[in-house]
Each structure stands twice: as structure tokens, then as C-alpha cells.
Image (cartoon, rainbow, N blue to C red; front, side):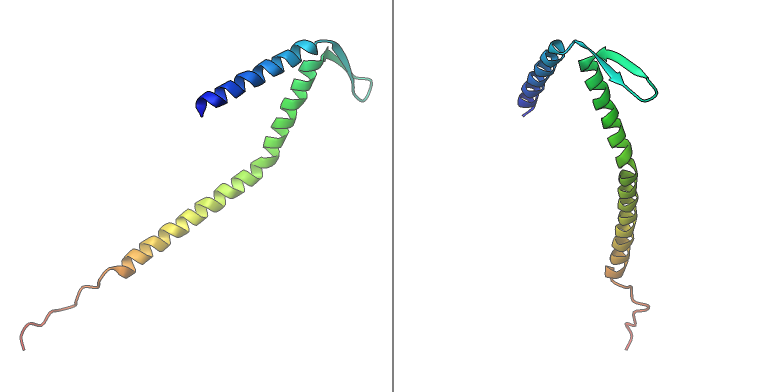
Length: 101
């Protein structure tokens, strides 16, 4: 399986590298207030892809922390229930054993 994923990674790298070599022309990116950014097309695409990925991760951060907090709460509840069940299932010791009749 690792061999197949290595081959797939290599093929994707070659495809993206070929894409980068084919798209080296300069592009102009126009922003508000007459701000203009010039650079190779492939670097612009890469920059906006990275910015989108970072914003996506930041958007998911509160959800991840909420799930971690809930998981920890559930783990402590399970541990409490397990200790309670172990204590309840233990045989109670007799108070006294009267062997004389």
C-alpha cells in the first residue's frame, strides 16, 4: 500500500510540476484602491490555494476544540461509571461470622 501511495504521489508531483512549467506567464491581479499585484500565474494560484487552506483550517478550529472537550467529558464519565460498577460488583464482606451455635 505504501508503494502505491508513493507512486501516486510521484505522478501527482510530475503533473503539478508540468502545470507550473506551462504557466509561467505574468499575470496582473487588480485589487481595490488601484492596488495591483504582478507575478507568475502558478505562484498566484499556489498562494491563493494556501490562503484558502489556512482559512479553512482556522474555520474548523472551534469545532475541533469543542469535539475534544466533549470527548474528554465522556471519558471522565465512563471512568466514573466503570469505578462505580467495579465497587458495586464486589462481594460485600460479612460483618461478623458467628461459628458458635
